[in-house]
Length: 68
Image 1 (cartoon, rainbow, N blue to C red):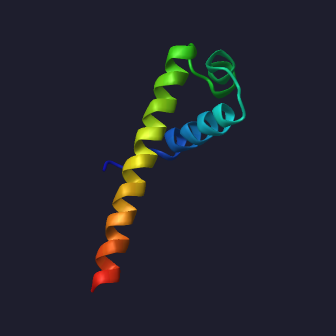
Image 2 (image 1 turned 90 degrees about the vertical axis):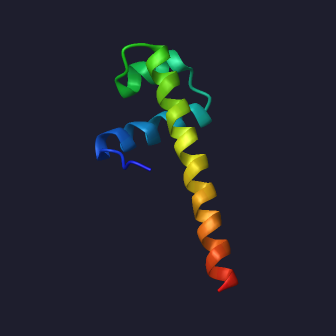
């Protein structure tokens, strides 16, 4: 998986934290610096997809290490 620029990773972190706190995508866009709620929504989706993929990869590595 391609690594993120630190600025992008930080924005993704902020988006996820705000969304978990119940903040709307309109407000997230305003706070984090996206042009509109659609940009914030796409960032949230990308962050969550990345998290799921990283979690699965981590589980696979753990399983391999446990069986050796």
